[in-house]
Image 1 (cartoon, rainbow, N blue to C red):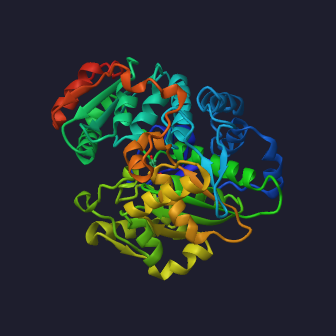
Image 2 (cartoon, protein in one colour):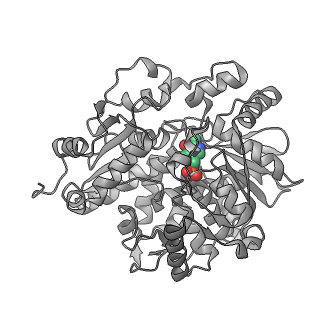
Length: 476
Ligand SMILES: *Cc1c(COP(=O)(O)O)cnc(C)c1O
């Protein structure tokens, strides 16, 4: 299995080589040369597997330059009951109205990003140690990605993490989660600014190729293919559990979306032959993706036009993984992708309304939006009907999914976070404190370790110079 770029300008490379890179050298994204196919017989053989075993089988289809036995050890270390203490690791929790939640948030940071990051932590360390190499991960977070990355990389010998976060812009819980980590290889930097300022600093430093080389800077952002591949696993898991009793054959999934990473994994699973009926994309007030699936026009917004909402992890107006879906939609023609992204740069949008009939008929995609009022009403209704408390992002999914439930087709809504992470909105909706899982009970009172910094790229550069143990010997 080799990987190519959506823009056609990269010689085919094995998994381990694209693992540590961000964008392909031609500015595109790495995708598998062909999508592996899974037969109905194989699906049935997978029914009895544990989550880790299933992950080994599926990731093995995408990764053939790591011996299968080693891969099995990596997934066993990523997916076990110490890391994901919930029942069955990824539980399915029934709601009313033909829907269930797919419980992806039982991991250390209570958001679905742990599912992919825990594997990434294992496979990064494995590949780096085999190459005798080291990496300094530089990232920016608005909350969920940073903590998932830090919990996955903490204590790893070959990796050091520098994570920028916006001062005073995260929930108390998110801050406590990140800043309470005392591991020497984790550096939290709180920047006086907003998320976009942090992101700009990262882009400047990663764009300084000399600095990037010298300090071996790497990323773990949502375009990382290993994250997408690890997310494919839970679509298979969800399908298997929803069809365990017989009866249904097709299953629909609804995905609260921002960067299009989570639902892209659903698209890949469907292309592999998993009988997915619909992929329902849910957005909040930032509805760039919903607009695309409704009209065929993709029109990203500026950060000034991006609303700050009560489902903040979906406050994204430029979906970094979207290009991978467009590549497939255009029949995997890199020339056409290049042309479209040129139009995007020149006009701020592109128009694929010609292809609109294919969105649902060929790819199963439909979409809807949810507002603050919808979120509150949905959290309240689900709580009253079932006693289950859902977080604001998952509520966006439940709200949108309701319009697409069909008789005889189970609808799985991906639970992208637990309510404990977003207590303020839960209080507003139902007037109670969301429960905090036992392993995080004392979090708020732990000492915190964070460096405050002005919004100044040179200060961050200096900090990395001083604190990166891992650098090339000739580093300036
Ligand atoms: C990251 C995140 C999302 C959005 O996922 P994408 O892969 O960016 O589409 C939704 N909900 C929560 C809680 C998240 O942390």
